Amino acid sequence: MGRIMPVIHNVSSVQRLTDMARLVYGMGYRSLIVTKAYGGAAQNGVPEAYRIALKYNASLIVLPDLKDAVEYLSPGEVLLVSSEDPEELVEPCRGVSGDVMIVFNGGEQGFSPAEERLGRKIYIAGAPARLGPLAEAALILYKSS
Image (cartoon, rainbow, N blue to C red; front, side, top):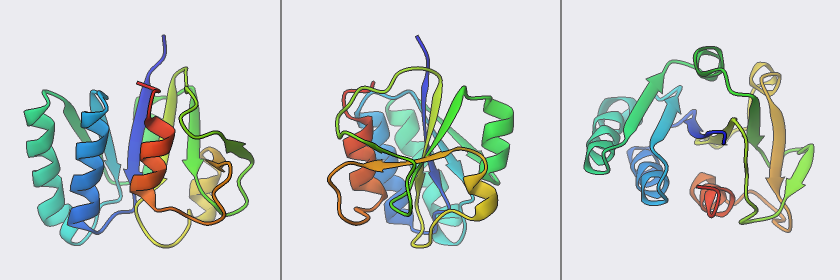
């Protein structure tokens, strides 16, 4: 059976990072990957997320950029959760299987063209606009663990 690797990318909010950590670990995932954390998320959010990981006996992986996560963790597939021109619409709560890195954008802007080349854009069927990374993660990761 493959691994599901949740990633929060491009995050500056302490609250958004810690909420994502609680969500991912609370759903039973053993690790969370953080890429391109800056501002408050880098200074205060990463230590707080690490504390949450310890509480769940889980791991927190922090890397400078998404490209590094793809290079070092070698997923079979990279799915970028994006409401901007997704290649595929997925059903909420649909089981995801395989060795897959699922990337949630923690910022307000979309993925850069270089980041888009790293994976395939997906979004949630029936969602008319961006829901935000926490709601997107809750819908996509639920029952996938």
